[in-house]
Length: 494
Image: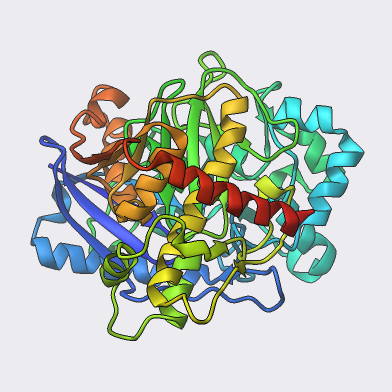
């Protein structure tokens, strides 16, 4: 008996096959092998083709079935994790009307800011836990204002995971967790945020039917079976945004537990047991995967848009073609803490919530031509992203989160000893690297909705700790380097 999980990322699609009885991963496949394209027609824009996501879902699924040679009829559930906050629009024929406006697109910032004033900050924060900001609802309003012909043909708006579920089943539905990440959910009324829809002039019928996060959300149809190689009738039994799913994958489901990831964007995600919010809207609160109105579980999300994308930029621009990320890490370890004064601010990937939705761009400071080398850039790049995590984490502490352990996956920036040690030393906590991925977590979570597991705790009980980083070395040196970086940031955004 097996479970299948998808992770619909910005860079690639990952699919994982998990043995349901042991909880062990059989295989994880990525498609494409190079990063998927993000199209930016204007500064601050970011779009991707949903059809390309689907093409790679099909390619990865066929590849994993061919590699493992398992009988698809033995797959009992499918889980979907996906890049958050994106907007996908389809007509009545379920055809995509325009490219997806994805999470790091900042074109709708002013729309959200205006609504925040019109509706009042108190109402938005107390009801949605967020400003309308640059979330999916504001992106839909942008389409209404700027592309009225497309807007007039919308049958349903969806999040990226809803689109993949539609392609698999032919059914269009969503979840409370998903709606909350799009600023469509009213936590006080436990219903769709009708007051925001009214403000934006958006018809409620554009919102899909709501399904429970862990439930049967549709069955694989004949067309999807032919395209993917999977058996017709497999149920889709779990769906969540990538960060709630990442937290679940790492075993973070209770109050004061914290997960982090360092992919294209950097995220710290902590769970609290009551609806709370940041008065300055630097941190976002969403319904966690196990949230109910009776037993609240709110995921407090700190997002840094300019994270792994900055490090991949350095690799592309500075490193030689045959240099790997591991090679970069080895070179960077030869450089002392603080990179001999070279400092990089990574905020070059759209508006940053922790900076009040400013888009300051990335910045390289104190570059000395006769001192700094490739290796300095690699270390300064990692340190700059780590410093951004620490800067944002102070807000989480203000909101009451103060964990002793931060759990992270083994497939992102936390593979770097430099990066992980910097975060651990500055936050004074243990970084625990768990052997799992988002796709594997989605697969296991699908076992809850498919009734393979009795409860959520059972689905995550087999988590292997690969390594730990403790705050034990050179703490003062890290602090000096961070304080210099923070001064640079203050000057940049002042």
